[in-house]
Length: 361
Ligand code: SF4
Image 1 (cartoon, rainbow, N blue to C red):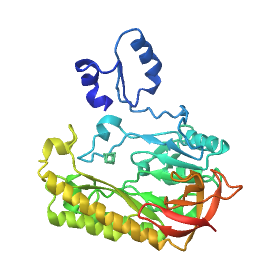
Image 2 (cartoon, rainbow, N blue to C red):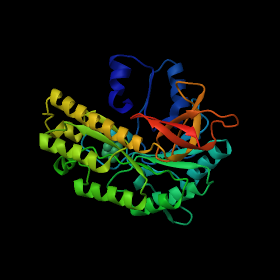
Image 3 (cartoon, helix red, strand yellow):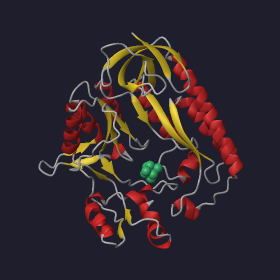
Image 4 (tube, rainbow, N blue to C red):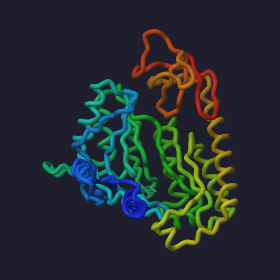
């Protein structure tokens, strides 16, 4: 937004004193000073190197148990609907040792779960300048997993074209790497995927899903889905639904297509699916996802999971909430001696489409 709307905010509407792009952290003190002196400040330059490697974030609204760690910035893919490549710049990976140091420090301070974050984590690649050795994402996962068996690791987001069997085998080898992958499909139809410039097709995606279930049988997969992308036909929409049936996503972020200025799709394709059709297709996708989520959650009834307690349930102080490895939220009655940050075994007794309800096992 800073990149796209800087002139509007600063000059036309004079809404703000400062516009700061995501790569301008280090310039903030100067910009605040400039604005305090009465000038308007702006820094939206995109860096090719900035990764914030040596900046430790203050986690002000943290639950003290789970934390995000940024491992890379930017994206080199050019999905035709997406503004990220224009606003976040080229991919650059953070020093692997600084990531491990941040995760170790979090563990020492009582955190028990870290989520490694990037637009496209599977293309993480960092070369150690001293040894010239390359660290890829599977190797980074392993380095973080070795910090302590009680430090859980999650990651997001994976790109279907880049996720490797090496990553899957690393996940299978370490119990503390969670069995959960967010693998956005966007569309289940190969022609639409080509228009979206996703660089994989339906078969490729299905092959990756088969590999995940073969190597990590109890892995949960979630997705992003866009309905009504430019020129999408009814049959092509049906292929998105059949893909959802095939994968059995645990959860999806679902949207109807809305054009973003400056993207390839906005420049080259006609946004020709009527809004009512986009919305109806979205309803079908949401309805199917709810059915799948409910069915999957009900299949968990009677199973026992290792749960990391994140805090009190939102609805009742008598209950804890926590997640299992598959990223499902489980709510269960408290017991003396347990607190946020502890692991405990919980048996699932009941389920809605969003939450599992359990008892301490
Ligand atoms: S959708 Fe994801 S992979 Fe594609 S350009 Fe945007 S950030 Fe990159």
